[in-house]
Length: 213
Image (cartoon, rainbow, N blue to C red; front, top):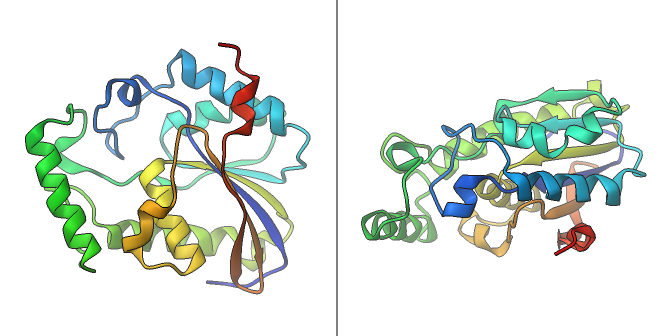
């Protein structure tokens, strides 16, 4: 990846959607809205981190990420959508409930990934290598010399995509992707310098304490 001056990068997962709530497969092909809980999670994140001097907001092309950071965009802050930050495409299973058949197929796919075959993909979907490639392009762009004035960055994206991205940025093998949990609006903060990334904050949900039960 390209090198540039030091940056602090906040990476959050989008808030809850009804697909999340119902346990349905939700990937790149599902452009769902946040539900009431998801909107509350986004507001809580904004209230907790609104004093951070973000220079730029990056999101995927999917509206659940836009809606999660809408209060930052209303400040307004500069905003750019990158398809490289989209969720993994789960192919024919998107929008379906997780049946025994789907669970068994997914377990076979994960077994292949754990054995080091990252080219395996669900029918009609993407493999980890597919996602890895578009994420690499997106992050090269975000940390490129033309973006040197963007010192503090907020990225809103998706659960499986975050797991894959954090493996890429920290140099872990992709089979360790499940090392990175990803609840709705969970936060990772990374420091970037001299072409290297270090995790400062791991899966923080502290902001959700602002939500009243």
